[in-house]
Length: 221
Image (cartoon, rainbow, N blue to C red; front, side):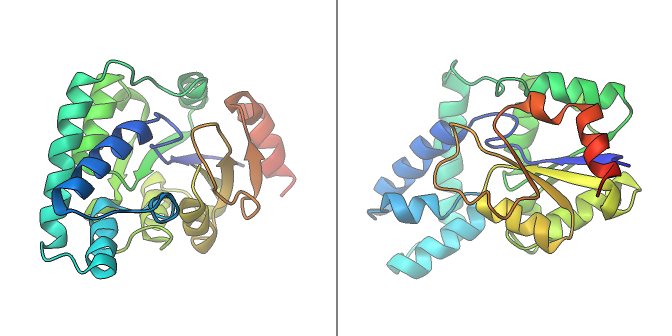
């Protein structure tokens, strides 16, 4: 039986990618590097610090990864505060409310910083539905390493076999697989060039994973 649901945030709950894209590219300009679209897409699902470490290694940037992180977060904070277009992804609030009403334990497991997570949760009043929030930025390892989902599943008090992950990125799906947790790949218009073939179940609309449908799938596992 399904008892715990571990949500990614970016691309699953809210589409902050356009904001992150703007903030990252302003930071790239600050340190005078040219990042190809292919390289940028490979960052999906990873923490800002790990991305900045990769940038420093790849381009031989003289600034520290931590400096790049602060530059990017400065730009993101300004954009976040001034961009009124940011909204929850269609259908996700309905599924969050349904799961909560049916007494599933909901946990946020995102590569975003806790500052960004809290800003999103406060803006859309989501704290009431979730028992715990984990930021990959606070952990030793980044997706596709399973650490964040291992900790998130443990926080529910249930076995990993009783949990599922909802992810939109290749790195996130790999992390769920490595943690041996059933993974729903959310294939949306917001997520580009990600590999959903490695997910246990693939959807394009949250109505496809309503509570009773998922309990039937878990019963038949």
